[in-house]
Image (tube, rainbow, N blue to C red; front, top):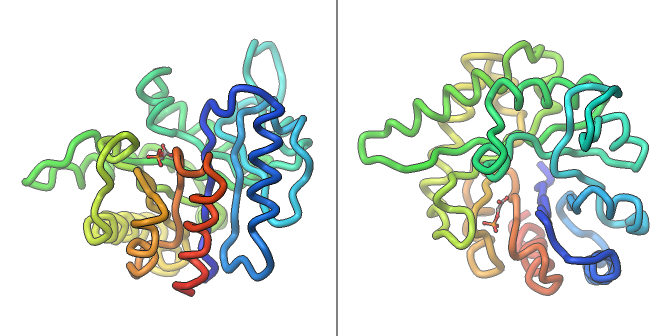
Length: 250
Ligand code: PGA
């Protein structure tokens, strides 16, 4: 399976000019035969100012759950689609933590994204890792709630990103083995909900302090289909090295 790499720019760069510079640097360096599907998720306004990529796919960092209406400040999936967006991140831990997003809200966003034909990237992850494995129950609950009423026929369009909060920068990354184990567990939960085939085909990524030095270790793990990269996606050189690791591993 082709690896999937998401660049989550978060609220960077500080202006449209720098965003274009960064975007063009990534596109220029990507080269041919990338060996991975590369998605760039910039802040919303840059969707309008960035040129269309030829080697990268457009993503967004959030979406609202209604198509249109009196929802000041929100952006619907239909609006995102009209800017060429294909993937959208939902339930990122920074939104859950700083903006009070609940699993119910994440579920609505995810279902709206699917309804308009976007591919949601559902972020889940525990706050703390405990020796007794309570965090597995946390992950299971998030999956169950965030995927409520999502039909089996649509589950293959969902991407899950396992992003433990403590590993997001400036954290310390989850070791590749531990990330693999957690992702295997996520597949088991998907199997219980949607069957074995869905569990095998759904793409599950790891995210949290990934960099050019550790990326290849994650690509070696069987269950990890790709990476969600925050901080290091804003440095074109480092980001390209991460993408090249995927190529080397394929
Ligand atoms: P990081 O961010 O790579 O900077 O840890 C990952 C994320 O928050 O998506």
